[in-house]
Image (tube, rainbow, N blue to C red; front, side, top):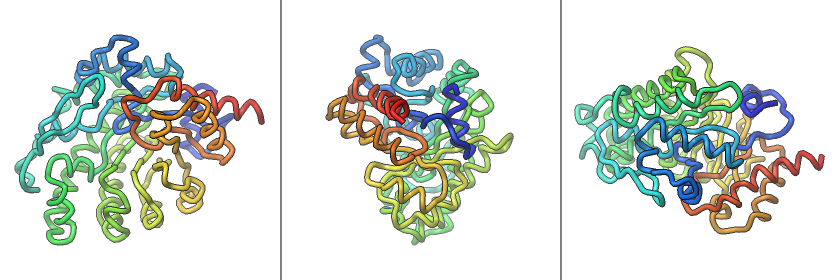
Length: 337
C-alpha cells in the first residue's frame, strides 16, 4: 500500500498492512526549528506564501518524519482573516494571535473569510501544489471554540455559553459557516481529508452538557459543510482528558479521533467505536531519546492503535532524530510480527 491508500483505508474502516504515521498540520504542526534551519527556510514566508508553504511540507516527507503533506503550520489563519491581529511567528515560534478582533461577540465586528487574498489564499495555493496520487494531503481548520476564543476574550465566550445562549449560538453558527467553507475549499483544491483541532473546547472546560450543546452541534455543522461535494474523511483532535465526554464525543460525525497523551486510546476506542489516533508524548519528542520514542511507537502498534501520531502540537524544539523514530518504531514493530 502507498501512504495515501494506507491512511484512507483506515479512515474508511478497512484493515491495512500497518498503521500510518502522520502529523496532520494546523495545531499539530510538523515543521520544527531543526528542519527549518537545516534547509534554510524562511518560516515567516512559509506561513504566508503558497509555494514556500508547499515546499516546506514536502520536506517533512522527504526527511522521513511523517507520511503526509500538511498545511497550514498554525491555527491562526481563520481568526486573522476574521479580524484578529496575528504575529506571523519566527523560526522558533509558530504564528499566533496577539489581539482579539472585538470586545464583544456581536457578529457585525467580524469579517467573512476571503479565500482570494492573504494567508487563506496561500493555503489553497499550497494544497493545489501538493495534490498528488500517493501521499495524502491533509487540510486543516481549528474547531469552533479555538476560533471563537481567538477572536474574542475566552472569558466572555465561556460565560456566554450559560448566560447568553442566543448570542453564543449565533456566534458559533457564524464561525462554523465561515471556517467550514474554508475547509471545503481546501478539499476542492485537492486535500484528501480534513483535520479539525480544538484545544479550547475540551471536556474539562465545557463539561458534558455544554460539550454536547455547543461542540457537537458546531463541529457537526462544520463537517456537514466540508462534505458538501463528497464524503471527505474527517479527523477530529480535542486536547485534554475526555473521560466525561466520550458519550457526546461519539455523536461528532468524524471518521477518526485524535487524543492527548493523558487519554487511554484503548478506552477511547472502546467508548466511541471509531478509529483512534495518537498519542506519542510531545514532551518526550522534545526532551527524550530516540530509543524511548521508538519504543513508544512499538507499544502503540502492539495496542492496535489505528493511526500513530504525536499526542498534540509538536514543540518547535523537538528533535528530528526523535521524530524519525516514530516511523522507525512502527516499521520495526510490523517487521517483527
